[in-house]
Image (cartoon, rainbow, N blue to C red):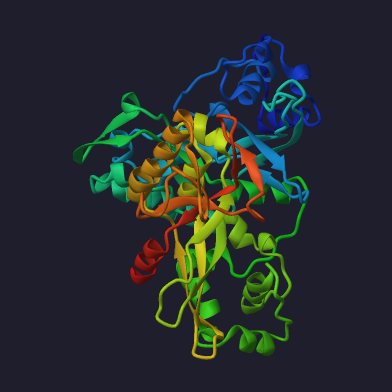
Length: 457
């Protein structure tokens, strides 16, 4: 197929937008759908079959003469009907030695990705649970450039990554360091390690990426034209920080009980799961707003968790997350796991209450936290790999006076995290990879670890 020829940027964009509504089987002229081993299949088909260009990893943009990079990015539809980006948008590999010599506007990130022609597609699964590539449809095509206010944050993000390179700390780069522009790992073994210029320590290969939270915001704005509520401006966050902005919003309520906050803000304090969420939206002056519709929470991938301390300052319990997928834990390497992705990409807003003598919940503080890279690579990885080992060797279930005991990693086995049951009752069970049935198990952060991270504020 001949490369698509265009006279100017307008012709390129016009042709690109003609792909909206088309399915991959209509676009694929090279039988690439038949190749089940092609990674990034959607992008490769668009590049080769729609535009007629050979797949490459050049330093300049795909359409270099007009300074436009081509990318395909998927989104999924949640049970609620809300759209979200399937994953982060991975850009170019970072050459630490070359990047150390650059400034933002000469960096490999900017020179390649300043303007991106985005092909959005809905990610659907077939009967086998795999991507239904043939029936994948292009939902939207958009020429994306960061708006000025978000670009200020992107510049700060790039500088954080760059400073670690200059300080000989490329091996300590973490996704949690930044808000919009990330440096995600690429490759999972020793052969993908890279030299860095100011340290003999090999660093993981990383690529620039636009984080999943920001991509989800784009999906919701461009495809469903959804209105998200802002609690600040990007300019304010660039001048201060998201931590400072949130502290200013919440600090007037410190020392008040949840009932006092509710009374002051004129809301009814529910007894269900929405209790704290309703309080948060009231304290942020956007009463009644679903937290998923707060632009900053979505854009910067902030999720909230409540911590309730006893009178003595100790947490009442370990912190629970979702029930785990045993099949994934048994088969997916840690480097590709959803567990690692969750703690690499998510910032957690801890809303901290403490019980007083009257057993009331007193609002104590907030903490915006992301799991340090060192913890991800050590304790979290060790927990995941031990769980994988037990699952693949066969879980030992033993009946005791207190119920069924198992040999999955418990609180005594790891100082950071463990598994324990979290089902409606003992009969709420799932099947293990070896065919046995077990009460649903949940991922928990250890309460002693929570004490340490709260003490580090």
